Length: 268
Image 1: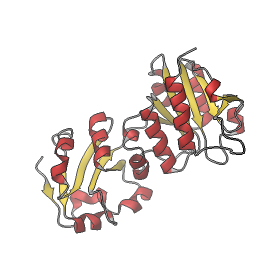
Image 2 (image 1 turned 120 degrees about the horizontal axis):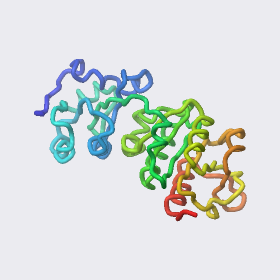
Image 3 (image 1 turned 60 degrees about the vertical axis):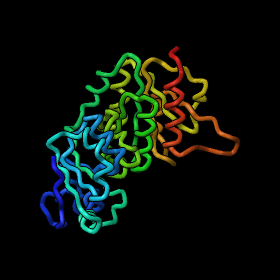
Image 4 (image 1 turned 135 degrees about the vertical axis):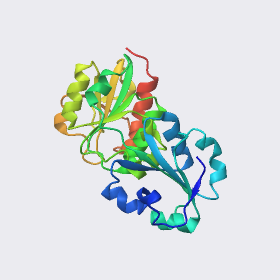
């Protein structure tokens, strides 16, 4: 579509972009915000989510030509000067590229698990409420070819703006589903023949010595408390070997090491 110039921050066509930070918390009626050129490329190329519109600084539009060729032909393109865009968002938008996407209907964890290939790698997040960590883990999941991410309801929304940004769009590419609790996830994965590994500083075995089953799930918990003991009791626990007198890594960094190991280790 031909770009539409926006000169009034109160223009109803850009209502979903108003007060970005406040609406991150209050919700957007089934929408989410994606920002930055790289994230938009993933949104359009992966096509897992439907874009509503894009709002761009007028001086950034020429550099988005290749990106916009990937977008649906009927998607509205709004352009605005810096002062108007800042007034709409409620803060200075230095990247100058925002899009609104529609959330999908909640995906069924059982259906996602059942659809995975014979050799599959799944990431399970338990109680992770930090958007930076969730976004970074999704980025690692995409980088090492994980087939899906499963989360319990105590985790933050992966489609929160900051999580999408930190993931560099991976949240919009890697399939994910939310289950009521980790025990439900463990039972579903067990029923589909997954070897399940809980990553913990106190794990019984070093991950470097761990053979990979064809179907593997890696569980990650909150920093500090870690995974619940009741959950670890039913899983195989593994640790990442550390230098003496050092306990653990940030959960996102630990996920990268664990996913790299299982992605590159041949089956038993």
